[in-house]
Length: 114
Image 1 (cartoon, rainbow, N blue to C red):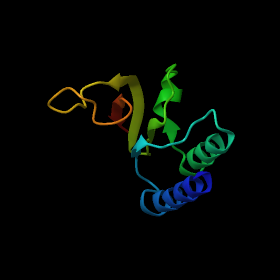
Image 2: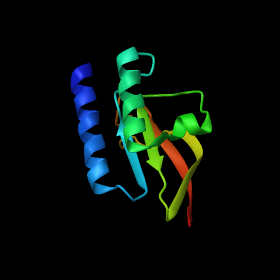
Image 3: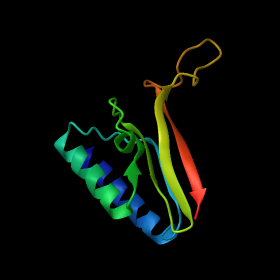
Image 4: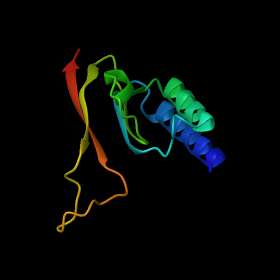
């Protein structure tokens, strides 16, 4: 699994380099990367370096880092800055049962044209 994830992140980094070189980008979702795991931590570190993305949780200093992440970067024309990171309990079915095995992460972004 770890080698597969590392290969997937390398592929995503290559895609981002080809298709979003000069653009602001937000990549969000379940990364399945646990920073307490040395291999996963290395995969995330390499991905962030190659893509120049920042982790909103780390940038804000949230105390609850999870495998669900919101990664972002601004551009020459657009500044992005996370202002809030929280768990969002609204993602439930009609009976109040969560839609996933873990809570959704919500990040509020401040943006500004340059």
